[in-house]
Length: 138
Image (cartoon, rainbow, N blue to C red; front, side):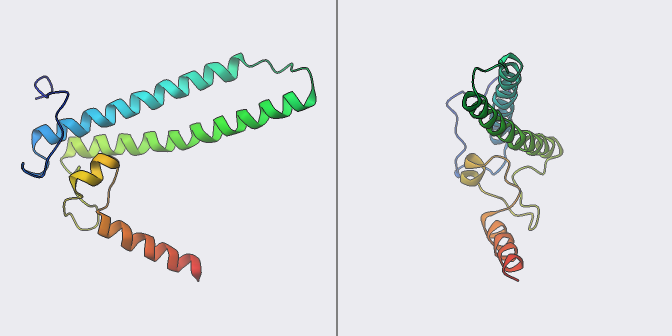
């Protein structure tokens, strides 16, 4: 299947849910996303190592520090995203990808295409967010 998937293929509602072509489509999408994040973090590491800490004045140094802090926070968020991508790839391997963790119902192609790491259906996600808001309001 991996070799025969057309690069222009997009999952549709007209085919069986999570058929081998759809699974391969999402696997490739997740792998490409993961590779992009890994490349970006490698570039950030090289940039941070190459940055000259001997800047001429305090305002240049402060600006550089703020920029480094932003980069590090971004990379931390991406590190967390990488673990979610890895979890989604594991779900592909065990056959549970594309199904809601709460209800075991299909998450839906449109949602997965927009957020391939989704673990909840839209309805379950909305319930989760309502519960979260109510706890915050207490």
